[in-house]
Length: 194
Image: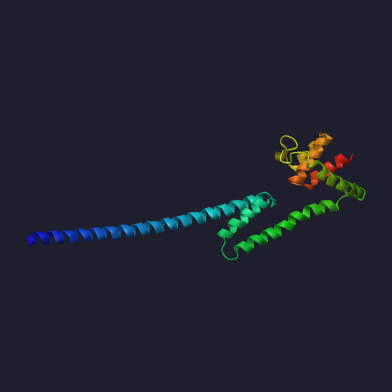
């Protein structure tokens, strides 16, 4: 009987040792899998952040650096993706690029003849009056006419001659509330002054 009890105890020890070894192996493999998962997630997260930063940077550059939302997105993801010094380089690029865009209208303003200067001075108060008077009358989220947002400035200005006074006022209010493009505002103000 003692021999049987001894064999049972030996078998119990063997199974306990095997169970402990299996459990230890399971724990090690689980920890390894968790570590690999974390490493892969970190890698994927880094790639996603890098690609998103690149996308925002491209979109910001493609829009001529006019979109505040794209600038904020680009800066946010660039900061997440940046290494020391990279973020500062991006900001320097924006600071250098912004004056180049701002110089173009100054050249256009320097070109007008002296006879045109008083017209623009008179048109400016008219534009302000349109901004104040018409903003309540129009839905400023609704396009002044069909396809307005798909047209560039040149095409919009070409269509202004065909619009009624009310439609011109809608264009002025819409521009003041949304894109506020100087060329369109001046063209509308000139037509309203006639």
